Amino acid sequence: MPLYRPLVPIPELGPHEVCADDVRGPILAWKMAVEARGGVFHVNSLTRTALEQQSLRDAYVDWLNGGKKAPAVAAANKPGRSNHQGGRAADVSTVGAFPNAPKDRQVDLLWETGKPLGWTPIIAAPDETRSECWHFDFFGDWSGVRDHLGYDIACLCSALDVGQAGEWQSDDRLLQALFLRAGFDVGEPDGVFGRRSRKALGMTVGIDRTSNVDLLAELLRGLPARTEWVKVV
Image (cartoon, rainbow, N blue to C red; front, side, top):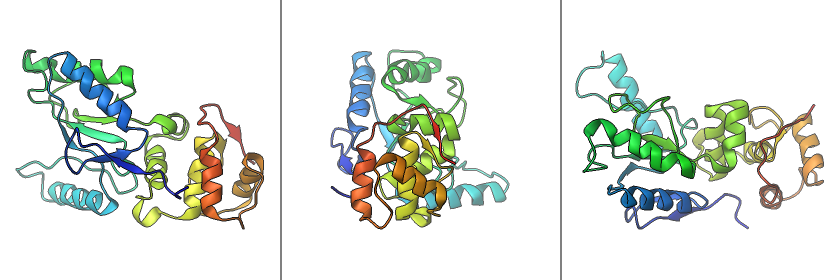
């Protein structure tokens, strides 16, 4: 088994588009749901590398520092804090997505078709005038981490999962993320495999950290993703 969760192609969305392997089904199901309502499903941005995320972040910070002068630049989170790196975020075109619906119903209809399939919008209420109204996440296995430790940590875990966390990527951070996925609260993935991480390893797969990391990751991924939490102290 590979160390990282694979990114798989989605030719139905474009020749170069990829996503986390468990996201392919849900995003194609969303595409079908949009088309069933007479819509056109187009993804402007899906999976990004850490370098691509950093480039977007730099452009956004430069725009802010320059006094927000036109042309406006879309907000971009720091590398390691975006679900795009984990192959779990989609920026969907909201202009003309539903040609037969009013302009102020486009985002509402994306919510209506995407949310039942697990696509969660990043903004609190549908609003075409809001920045990031186009951004939707599919947390999947990382939903419990998001609910327990927050959005940013769940995004970091999803990036670690596919090996795209940039400067934060490390074997021990990956294992810590997989503990969290399985519901064992070892705290935020910090790459320090201390007492709590060692205890979690014994509580989960019963093998010590001297074992091959590929094997440990495979065994931890074999555990079910959980939303209830075991505090590791």
